[in-house]
Amino acid sequence: MEKLIITSAICGAEVTKEHNPAVPYTVDEIAKEAYSAYKAGASIIHLHVRNDDGSPTQSKDRYKACIDAILAKCPDVIIQPSTGGAVGMSNAERLQPLELRPEMATLDCGTCNFGGDDIFVNTENTIIEFGKKMIELGIKPELEVFDKGMIDMALRLYKKGHIKDPLHFNFVLGVNGGISAEPRDLIFMRESIPPGATFTVTGIGRAEFPMAVMGIIMGGHVRVGFEDNIYLEKGVLAASNGELVEKVVRLAGEFGRQIANPNEARKILRL
Ligand code: KMH
Ligand code: ZN
Image 1 (cartoon, protein in one colour):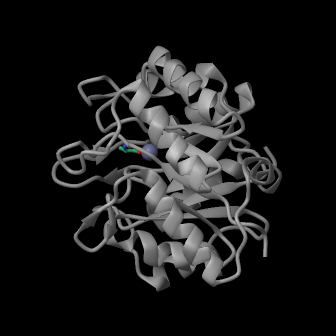
Image 2 (image 1 turned 45 degrees about the horizontal axis):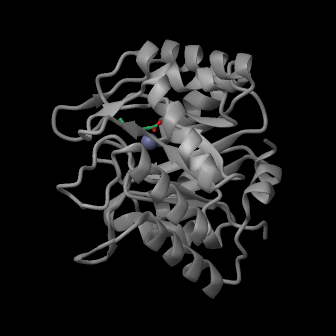
């Protein structure tokens, strides 16, 4: 089996220090958390950024400051900015980090409920606009799918040329409004993508590690981090993103799956 690529989603846009005091906001905190994940075995950092007060932002300047600080500590890591940002942001706001020409970025493939009254809006035209921009700038999209219909949308737009090979999906399971996180759900998602496409598995909340194990044994890749889950185990807050990554490394070891370093990840993903 291919080596395992671990992505760490170190802060997201929604989780706060009230949920877990280790959630990073400042540039220094973000760089420190990225380093903890990288040192533990993450080769990709899925990056959202915050203002110092913790509010989410897609500011290009703030991304630049965070990326520079991360690269100073983790020179070869793959940085994957979010183009999802936070619920309610405009497309123009969300697209800003692409101007920095990262190697990868997320491309969210559909609209869904996002808990309470929140709706995460990604219309077909939005996905086309974001996909075209990534082709134009040579940025590999990670196709974020929160439900099976989003895979169908991605494949439709791929056929029309708005998304290019090689395809890489991130199956996000357990969002309140997306597909649930049962083993059958992940198998259904996996069977719905073309042979040859790569995939990462992200389980939300308590589904993080069960889904990680499934990703490990199914030959996929794994994402963990405070964006998705703040607990190391039931009732125990993780002290860092590194602790979450270390747990994945331990689980992968139990199943004989080796961990990819960033350059190996680049080869697997054909970056
Ligand atoms: N914060 C969520 C609304 C992404 O990074 O592309 C969207 C999100 C997806 O986190
Ligand atoms: Zn995200």
